[in-house]
Image (cartoon, rainbow, N blue to C red; front, side, top):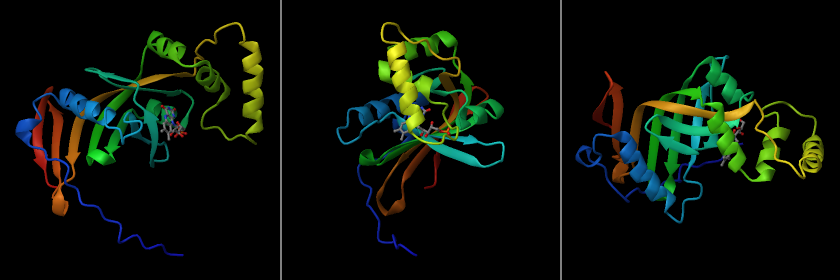
Length: 214
Ligand SMILES: Cc1cc2nc3c(=O)[nH]c(=O)nc-3n(C[C@H](O)[C@H](O)[C@H](O)COP(=O)(O)O)c2cc1C
């Protein structure tokens, strides 16, 4: 079977990027682009990003997770600490992050090092989640093989009854990771595939800014 997709092509013409316009703090520039993505009605879940980790088998694996906060120390997402991604990170903390905001014709690629956030930060976020999400996190041994869906639903029903009058505590195996960036690459689509790419990378604790060929 062969499906020909060679005709799939789009022209990018919504913006441009100059070194003179990105400033000298990549986090501030990220914030500017993130705010524009978040307020753009055609972008759902502007905070969704692809997270790539390196497995013990040497293969990278990418999957989508949701950015839940960011500050000058890094970018935070939450997950199960026994999941494939968490085991990968605990074994090899170098990760790749990419955001793609199609209707702005923009991509941001971040390389960084991930580490577990403090328990009280994870507690605070866990306790802010709707009850269904909290119970779901308890139910799921994320990334484990299970025989069927029914066992999840039965466990959820059991927990719903059990926690009818009390609040579930964050399980020890669930919490946040923070990614501390070493480089940011900002990509703006342009016509004729001559896209703009501006990279910030950490050199001797100072951001160096360069233009890359598309
Ligand atoms: C839009 C979207 C958002 C997601 N957000 C998260 C998240 O924040 N945390 C998480 O652990 N999984 C999230 N997932 C599920 C992951 O993509 C993935 O299936 C799961 O974390 C297991 O990955 P792993 O087995 O590689 O660890 C999300 C999936 C999608 C499509």
